[in-house]
Length: 440
Image 1 (cartoon, rainbow, N blue to C red):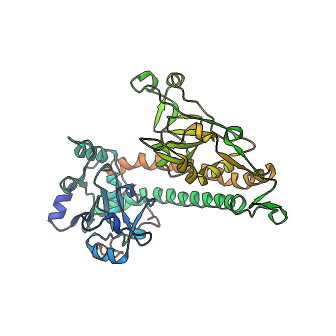
Image 2 (cartoon, rainbow, N blue to C red):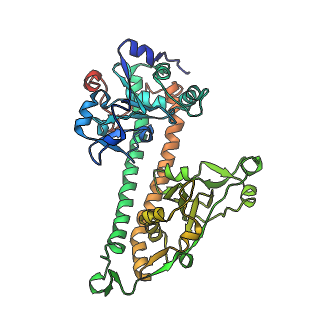
Image 3 (spheres, rainbow, N blue to C red):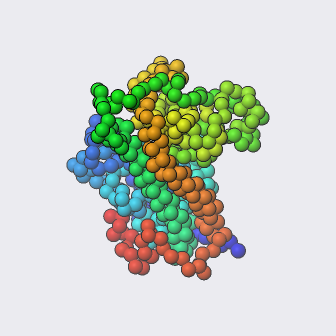
């Protein structure tokens, strides 16, 4: 039997001084000219994920500037919303981000009430029902979704007994912890494979380098050859969007740049959009094999991903097909490290574009076959492990996401379960520091 839990609006909590809302600093308080190369990280809307902080492309301010913006300094347990274009997303600030600064395009919610487990609240904000509600409310009459304090005040938070919140959060957090641990392993394996590539093919410290003969910084038995002669590559295309036969119930993976730039792993198992076989046959896109390398070639240049199943792309890609001479791991890292060169060669009046005509004339470094094969032998097991971890994370996310609405709604009861708190969660409130001490 489902239990209907009472709900409390954020606005009621703010009025009772059990919560506080804070907008980001105004433009006069924090201008782009005040960002520095290193310092205190600033969380802007692009860094707001689905309960997590996306640490890519962070901006920084000096410690002195952070002190001036002390009202906007974040503490563990804060919830940060993006104000424009990302209203369904939020970031729960953890201990690693304690002391970072809230950006101008963000709203901060700080819960002071001991009635709420902030991790439980964060999971509630990740439910589809809440996200759809936010999108509908924030998009009304606007070309871009926009969030303000009034809308956040209207959010109704379910309030089951605190022990129940703690147990629900513990179940779901355990999945998040496993996913995060796998992501760290993926990052480590990627880093190791890239470091070996740099050591062998950039710094020229490959096996046998001491006995090699060099000319102008390169071994005399190494060459370059045009991409056109090195491996196959394809462009992409889009089936007509207004023809439902090309899209409804489609099963062909059809990737767009957003699939690549939003990925947490170099391996991609599934595209957001799928076309039908008929749609594929009625456009100039090519179906390429699994373990090809998709590289964005319009606007965003040089973002890369590996498809785990046969796929096609839209016109914003150049997809490279590895072969025996240029196997997956070698070609992947050559493309990745050549990104600045690709960006320099990209032209276009409206947006940057690396054309196939330009790409085919680029010359790829061609070491001896045995050396490339030796690198593939070392790096490929790392890539295979990355793919395996990526698939595992997909299954973990699917399980967590199926449990999420059932746990949050009370359809799946947890009171009788013996639940162990995962490492990322603090002990229950009776054993932990008071919430007010954390949310200073």
